[in-house]
Length: 136
Image (cartoon, rainbow, N blue to C red):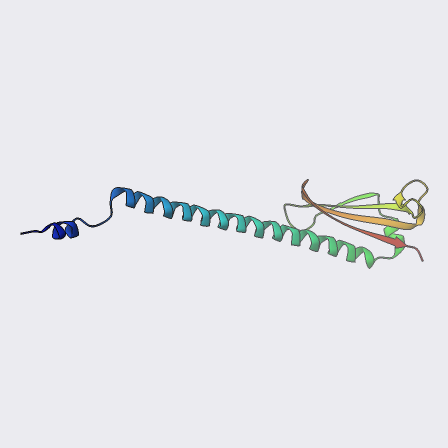
């Protein structure tokens, strides 16, 4: 004969509500982990592109530093280059620099060139490197 205590022991287990709560908890945790993984992957991709852009800037500036001033002065005002990765575009701008106004203008010194190198992936992600070159 089954006593009341034995019957309770036989019926013990998870109820439907407990199973649903456990399933919901696992789903929420899995969603949070998946979101963190996706955000981490996006951050890694953005950092990779930033590193490629900065490397392209440095390479272009080093190539210009190794040229004589006459070749830099002979560059057209705007030069487009491929930064070495498909997502990006690169532009080199050269102008006569006016030290008194700290700008490029018609009164700029032809023996002082400001070179601005810009690498863009999209309008919100742009890197710029500026250097002055002098004929002295």
